[in-house]
Image (tube, rainbow over all chains, first blue to last red):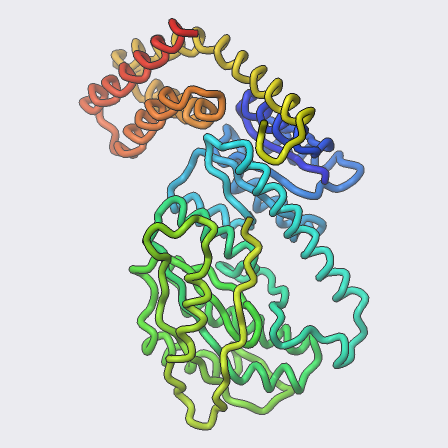
Length: 323
Length: 118
């Protein structure tokens, strides 16, 4: 794996190099600033596979660097691990909103650092496999991802992939413990849309729905991810999460605005179930993500607004990639 | 034995970490001098605001590296100084400098103790 590590502190760069090389990562490039990193990215003959950025650096900071890297088509899905002493929620949120996929706080333990790098490696492999599957698929029912599978959604503020959401949860648990909460939203009609449309058309509709959810959650500082089976998982500060009934009413109105959710293939109105929030339990380990499953389970007790909508059992489960 | 590494890789990692630690120890004396210079600048009518910004940046760096090279106590004092300056925010006033100086002196004590022991 070709890694570009950026930090203005020479000792940190040396520490990163020693740690990564000892763990078998031999293709490491170091940069001392955001500007230096961009020069090295531009000059790289073979693209980098993964990035490690400090946040606070003179000149361009690591968050701006992340934005610039994300704007490069070739690095749209590349893992970006922030390695920083900035452990306040504001910085963590800004980094993930800019496109970071993981966050390690300094001073770091070398074992923890390598765990996160391996996780980035795994995320990158999964992302490449998914991209290759889409590239080589023919537009037929058989090539369509199953309804239970997450799909790739890009460029929606506050939307992250399932793996990145789990990384966000872990760093927030580490920094804030019980202060975060998660709740799930289920749009049952997506199953009909999935059954009656192509993979591409289904992805468009799910993207529209994700955008509506993201808009509906403005002000809650929540991140959203689609986990399959028509279920979206939202994670944010518990005190800011919306009350389920109010969120459900708001969402149903927005989902049925054809300017917001365009669904030509299947004639349907949309409903939404919003589950109660779940929080990490006291003394849960950082890697213990079972409260996300509890949030999904809470959907089974969530009221259905539209009496015509079918009853579905929640089949979605958060597939943990935590070490 | 380092977790998840064979003996050769663990030795390579330990040698690398020892090298970084040694370089950190060598830099400690200069870092102490720099902090004393900034302590002086905090008293100056013209320089105190710039000195405070510089102090914060240096404390931030120290906070980031110390725990990884075996000096967690220095890292904690540096983090406290950084947090103190952050807590004062953009409304920083000259009269707040006494508080900053107090945190800086505590950091310098810790650095000098470690320097003596090194």
